[in-house]
Length: 330
DNA sequence: ACACGTAGAGAACTGGT
DNA sequence: ACCAGCACTCTACGTGT
Image (cartoon, rainbow, N blue to C red):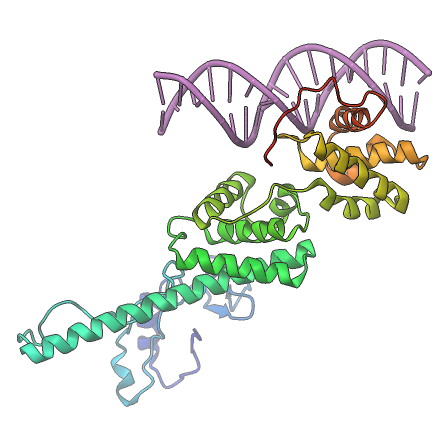
């Protein structure tokens, strides 16, 4: 992409012609000669220093041949584009059963061309998959780092993504959305607590698209993902709260008890975990405020209020005879 | 400062059509 | 595929300790 102006043997007439063909070449202010500043990607006036245009990078082929017959100055090849996976650089074997002069091919040659087309297609699509995968894995890597998830979870996410790719689940969906979904699915199946919100924060896609992609992924791949277990969140929240070890243990017991009474049906596991910690704080004398628990758990104080009383009520004085027994198959 | 309760809005799942 | 109903959570506010 160098615009080479040091070829001083060119006549000035030729230069004018070149300038005319290339486009903007004289400064609108002083009519001075414009130069491309490669380092900054700008076009500046050599005389007055005016910056005429940013991003004036010409991705077309160089307007000068490299070979002996270079002076023919034929402009060769199409400009590249990011909209195609190969940037438009690949060669496509045409479908006509004729040679370059239009003469029909013999049967033997036709068969040969057909095989070549097949392989051409295979390589091109494989290349496509590679790029897709590479980008997705890069995204997963980036998000994993941002979330601080362990390496094996990241590995699982990659495997899930590959499966999705193999089962042709990707066409029509964004790579970012699907990689986010794969990472979230990996976290879930590994019991590494990362909430939807946390994952959404580091993702390049919005929550809606992410959730849609996640559901789709789980459904199509039949991923066996347990409903999130509130106890998975306890260590994380407890450490962020600098809570006493006893609080965490007590909270775990509360959640166990709650599970046996089938207290969670559709209730947010994060909210339950937060409420359990708060309740445990009260019971063990290591008080935590609702506000701080709500803060680290990312739920509202109201949710904690509503949940923690249920948690305490369950194995409190009342016992359970008032509750209708609800057969919950989990 | 903190805890508690309530009302209305809104997102998400379910079942009906 | 669209829609209504539902349980749940959130924000916002007022009250009580």
